[in-house]
Each structure stands twice: as structure tokens, then as C-alpha cells.
Length: 456
Image (cartoon, rainbow, N blue to C red; front, side, top):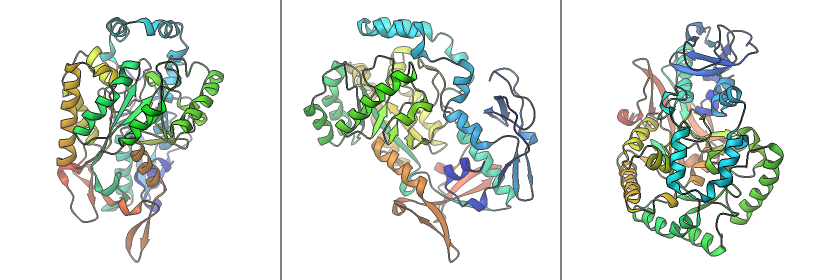
């Protein structure tokens, strides 16, 4: 019950005391916890089979009693239902990779020009703006709920503040990463030019390589990426849309994918088209994954993890994709500006989260799209300078999150100290209440109110 808060904040266990108000029910469903829409089993009230329409608010059933926070659900269970997209698989019961239409589409996809694919995808996505959950353009339900529970814990313990280990190293306000999915031979051939563009803005990124069928992957190509300080990850097996069609086929392909990971020296993985079944990830031998969108209204597989923070899927760190993909921006939304990306960045930064872009070399070959990408790079580098944004390689971000997950706050002679590998870069922060909200400040007492204040 307390794990969700303790793992997220890395705060001392004595400050968190969450308990269910009673025995949880057997049936899963949607319910509200104030403004937050959650999914799972509850101790009281009724749940709904749909996120739309009237959904009961169970916040009034919560209470503070004898230093404890009593809520009508298991916090860890319901938040993991969002992170792992249990809510979506339970309501749909099918996977697009297994559908007849999906199989037909990926059978003929290699022969379809982008213009025709875009037309088919727009037909399929007609009405996507009517989806109410997850919330477009960025969903922070998990993060909002954790803040609410921490605020209740603060009040239950009658504390002025709760110390915790700050989310990013060296008191960075947020983290931004770039990942480049190489889909076709044309994209592979543009990788050198793309690295030139990134280097011009002093930004490094990861390149996700399809190991089979799509294009030739030579040792020289991979060495060039590494030598220039970029990162190599494995993207699927052959990008045919069938990786998650059935469990037996997935396990057979996972063995090959793991072997390519060792051959490429890759620590990270991404599935093609962001298809995913997180419950199968235990077969993948990677340090981190980058296949789960925050909100997937414009993706073939709907759903979304509803958080802008990394989280663990088993032993793998998940770096969720929090920004709209370049393909969707250019070809579905017909937008060549960075206005949507700016809006999403602000929403993610309000939670001090992970700003994660997928930019395909295949889709920025043209001058217009390339100019949009360069506008984005210029904006990100400005944010890095002006608003204290950390811009590491994806593997570095995942390694930090893994290190942080093993750190502990310990009290020594009346002062808090951080223990664990990587502690030299870690910072102690404090959560307190101001105007009914959680706000953060650092140990030095410099609250940095402009960048650290959270929304309700």
C-alpha cells in the first residue's frame, strides 16, 4: 500500500502511513479520487466500466485518523493499473497486432507510400479528440495522485515538510531526452546528417536500429554512431507489427532481440509502432525500455501510462514517451510548428517529469520538417540553459533512475543524509504545503518557487 509513495519520492518510511478503509471488492472499474480518474478495486462505493459519463468520486470516503491516511483503495495497485495499462487491456481484451485488419495492413505496409498510409491512418483516427481518458495532450494522473497522497500524509503526521530524494541529479528541474527510430534505408542513410544537426545544438540522442529485414546494418554504421557519442538501441526485430501477436511467437523473437542487444552493445529497447504488452517484458534482457506512450490517442495501440516519470516494469526501467511523435505531428495533425510540443513540455515540467521525444530520421529528410526539428532543438537548448533542464542520453537517464531507486535517506545526528551509489549527484528536497498544494524546496533553502511550484 505504501510502496507507490516510497518508491516515487524515496522518502523515509516513517512519514508514510497509507491504509485501505476496508476490504477491497473483487471487480475492477473506474472511479474518481477528486479530479483524478483511477482504475481498480475499491473498498467503498461503485466503480464504472467506462471512464466517460458519471464516475463516482471516492475522495470523500478518505480520512485522516491517528496519524494514518485511510483511502478506499490500494494505492499501489490502482496506480500500477495505469502505468501498466491494465485498464486498457481489461476493457478491450485484444491487441492491434492480433487483429485481422492489423495483420493485413502490416502485410502490405512496405508497398504503401507515406501519403497513402497517412490517409488510412486519418480514417482510423477519426474522432480521436473525443477520447476523455487518458487526458490529451499529456496525462499526469499518476503524478497528481501521488502528490495528493503525499499531501494527505503531511497532514496526517502534522508535519511542516517531508524530506525526499529529488527526482533528478544535481537539482535539475526536469529531464529531456531525444530518441531517433530508424525505420527504412532512407532514414539510415540520413543518420549522419541527423547527428550533424544534433551536434550543432550540442545535443546527443539514441538511435533505435531495426536489426532484420528493413535495411543492412553494418558494423561500420554502428561504430560511427558510437564514435560520435550517440547511443544505440534495438528497435523490435523486423518492424512487421507482429512482435506481440501471440506469446509463443513473442518469446521466440525475444531470444533473437536479446542476442542483437548483446551484439550491438545496446542497453535499451523499443518496439515498433509502440506496440506493447508490458506483462511480457520479463523475456527482454535490457536495462530499459522506451515503448510506452504517456497518452496514445494518435497511436495504433491506444492506452497510455498516465505518468510523466520513469517507472519500473519488473527489473527494466520504463522511459515513457511523453511528447507527440514527429510522424503524428507532421502527417496526422498537419502541423509543422512546435506549438504543441511547447504545450506538452510545460505540462511535463509542471510535474518535473521526463520530456521524451521520438524523432525519425526518415521523416525529417525534407527541408520543412527538418526546420521544425531544428526549431525544437533550439528551444530545448534554451530551456536547458534558462530552466535547468537535464539533457542526457536515454541510457544515462535510465541509469540515474535505477541508482536513485536504491538510494535511502538516513538520519545521522539529527541531519538527513543520502546513502547509495550515485549519492554525490543526488539532492535532498522537501515537500511542504502552500495554499492547499504540494510545493518543493531544496535543502539549501532556495525554494526556486518559479520552477518548483506544482499545480493542484
